[in-house]
Image 1 (tube, rainbow, N blue to C red):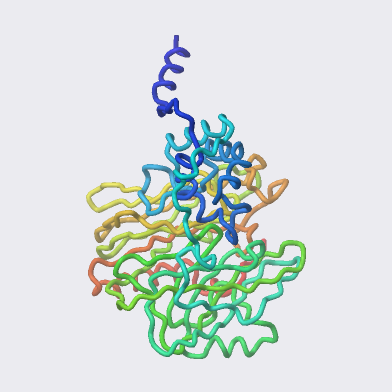
Image 2 (cartoon, rainbow, N blue to C red):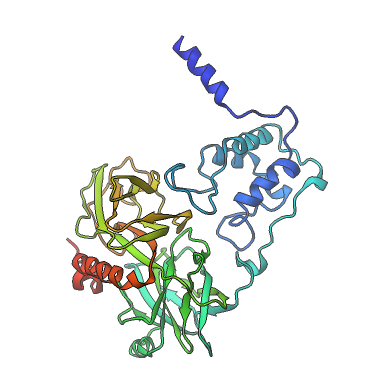
Length: 438
């Protein structure tokens, strides 16, 4: 009887499927264009395009298999634990349509019903940038050895101050680049450091080695274009150099990389200040081999009223579960994010559909869980090895960056002081040195 009730409940909760044939032109193309095409078009990160009926039809069974498992389209935050802009999560009804289309032989339908395909000019997702900066020369990455953190200087050539509303990173060789972090320099310090080394750029683990004029943001695997929240704009000053820290991991054969960066400007000066609350730790990461539930936590008390506008989680291969929670002064708890199947190869910067107000004295918390067992299919070590905090992809990190905008611009200084104190207590001078191997 229990099984009958269970089966009946399952049937009753399944989304209704029309008896009419499901076709690509009318039913499937809108799903692919809205949720998949941004990555699945020529020149992008996906291994094949999904822009035409021919593209999709020959992979109908594959598309059905990866969507029913929710492996694709990749969207890591758990539904109901934060509402984000641009969610690619498919609905149950959309998944059911794809299943029915594939099982019926992937019919094309009437081409007249096909919606206009999305347009991606010049390969840039947001259209042609106002300014494209490219590394002057390719960088040679050796076939093996330790991961490389290298800084490169690219003159902007700007003759006036410009305000950035969005930017995009386009590596020429995605296999070898893990992340990029962008800064500006108007002092010439970066050029002097570059001139002191024989190779292109200079080695720069941790920080870029000097106080940058401004920090523009960063990109990791899976990160798409970065768009600033309303009223916020990053600034590039006249005559500034772009300083880019790139993290390379050798692939086993010689590689080259020559990255490009696209910037989209606005004429409106920034009205608000965007700041980063970095939750995370390095000292607590010492994960024994075989430990399948190693927990790392951190917290920060927000000293002023802020609006949380986005969140950026970061870890490496063996992290499995990520949780971010805000405890408000009245005892209310608000979820900032929950990812329970972290994937190192698909990292994003998430922006809230509606900013989350965090009053002064709110405590923001993170809890990351790591699985260093042989049962973790993402574990790079077989058999498992002790894992410490470190810069290499086979080391580990724990970072949950909460992007906030102070409600009152006058409070930016107080928030900045509190954040600087937190960072210095955590890292001290160690941020400039590679961690000692134990």
